[in-house]
Amino acid sequence: MKLPVLAVVLAMSLSAAPQMGIVTGGVTGTYIKIGEDIKKIVEPSHISLQVFESAGSIQNVFDVRRKRGVQLGIVQSDVLDYIRDISDDHELKAIAAKLAAVYPLYKEEVHVLGDLSLKSLQDLHGKRVAIGPQRSGTYLTAKTIFFQTGITPSKEVFLGGKEALDSLRKGEIDAMFYVAGAPATLFSENTTGDDKFQLIGVDDKALDSYLTTVIPAGTYKWQESEVRTVAVKAVLITFSYAGEQCQNVAKVAKIIRENKDWLDVNGHPKWREVNLDERLPKWPQYECVAATQEQPQPKPKGPNIKIVR
Image (cartoon, rainbow, N blue to C red; front, side):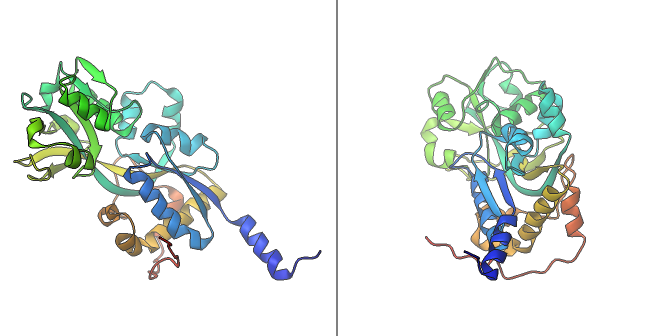
């Protein structure tokens, strides 16, 4: 049976719709929520974006190059420092050399939680420290900070989240790293003054590649004073693709820019911290995206989407 002309045109349009993917993070984390927000705003433009869970930043570097159907990923801004200075994986280094930023996203504070005997970051030397699961964002940040400051723990423990917190509470470790936007739910909901924990300042001149910031007093109920620390940026990245993939990534970037106001109101609260015009050291913007920024962009009211709750 011969299809009507309209049906043929529709079928051709659907078959030509870009099929894309973004690798994010764990199911309860912020990265995956950001990915889901991007999925919502690109769908009205007939872009099919699949949001994938991920084990962390290092896995995402591999996936934007090797995972079928994936062109985008979210990683921490210090992932390049880790790959350049610490990793001995030659394939990872080759991939990283061709990574580029689509946009910077929001900042995530580096929390170092320890017992009351620790007075400074240097006191972690010779101590037992949880640094997150291997290849996680917290892991690579802790390893990079140790490398840049010369701190050598007596034992690096590959635990993260509640497991690390429980281990600290039992006295099995002396401190733990945790990278998350403050206030981190892990600490807000699972620690009290009775634990006798404290946040340790991460304030070292050797860490000049990080953003400096402060966790204000009272961010956590037991935290009496402000704590100086450093932060990483979450970065939306891609590989230096050419041809059709270049056009597809540029289209997604353009849609994000055009719908930033909508995302601020309707997306994850972290969108309100995002400055799409910010440029990060060591992270060149993808040429295909930069080309779309040169022309004035319209500001529509928001994507024509209906969310059923």
